Amino acid sequence: MAENPKDELLQLVKRVSAYLTFKMSNLFTIIFQKVDPLSVGALAGLAIAIVFTWKIFPSAPQRRQPKRQPPRASSSSVNLQTNATLESSGAASASSEDLSAQDVVDDFFQPVKPTLAQIVRQKLCEGRKVTCRLLGVVLEETNPEELQKKATVRSSVLEVLLEVTKFCDLYLMERVLDDDSEKRVLLALEEAGIFTSGGLIKDKVLFCSTETGRASFVRQLEPDWHIESNSEVISQLARFIKYQLHISPSRPERLASNVFYSTSLEHFFGCV
Image (cartoon, rainbow, N blue to C red; front, side, top):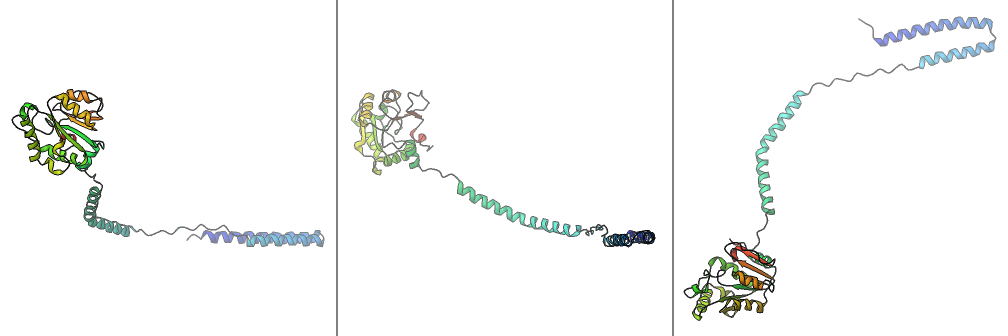
């Protein structure tokens, strides 16, 4: 069996030490014979110092071999299997909980739909006085000749009109050909319940015999908004009224920057 490298190094050191001791003794013998006692003492001290240094000189430290760690594949696999089991078992419940939480968040941050009252205020730009033509806007009929036979309030516009009366000082006006037409219009408005809200009274329903007369009514009242279906009246009032809403089945040419367009009054307020 091969000797340990440490033992071989120790044997080598002993041989060198014995050889040096032998040589030093011979040297001392020669020196004792040829030099004076003072030199002998100095040399002896030097020799002792050399031997002492050799004895106490530390050998090179041995590098320690790192201990091999036993493989822990089994424990790792166990941990992985355990984690996989936990994840799979909790996946369904966590998924359902996440979906429920997301639904709550979505419902909470869902934009709130504005009410009709808020839309009316926004669309009318906080206007406080409004004038409105009846034919083609509030009534199904579109010309004075039809009013000689009947007057019908459009059911789709009723809710918007009642909301406007709550917020604004509303005046309704129309050109009629006879007194009977005027009576038919007032009766139709009353039966529709427009006067029951308290915002509109019969005295605020105005009648005239010409289109120019209706335009004159509007200028005298000085409303913030005028709602009209006749493009000629719209053009006449563009310089005098702050805002106008032109009601027309088809999009007309815009007559001024303060004139807006819609197919109906309820469509303008987003009710259809």
